[in-house]
Length: 136
Image 1 (cartoon, rainbow, N blue to C red):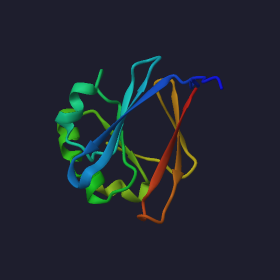
Image 2: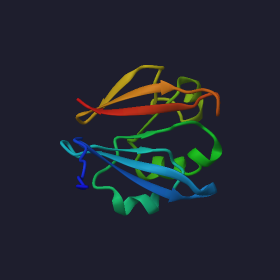
Image 3: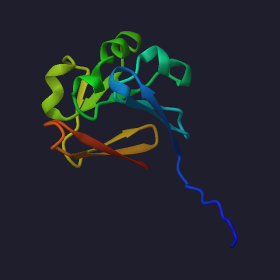
Image 4: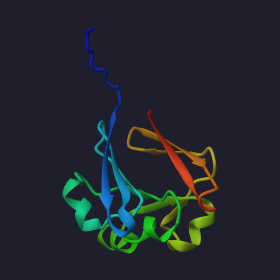
């Protein structure tokens, strides 16, 4: 039997980090064409992700607003004052005016050369949302 390695063609990378309050995950997604980076969830202390960032992140995407997923959001805002917070429109009052970008269901946003589609997934929490990242 011959072993073959499969490769995935994509123009982005995903780094996964586990820790923080309640051992949850945060992610750094990097557009390999433009260098734009985003963070998914503020579950890990900002200073622990900092060494893995290659640029100032464009946005912080929130999957839902349970405390363990947004625990360190103030630190990200303090260290990246221009960062946009992206999430379910029902969450907007949690992050301040002018910074929050509401993602309605089936809405697309472009970061670098990446297209990110929102998929509302209520059930776990009222404002749960998933993101599908695709190349443009």
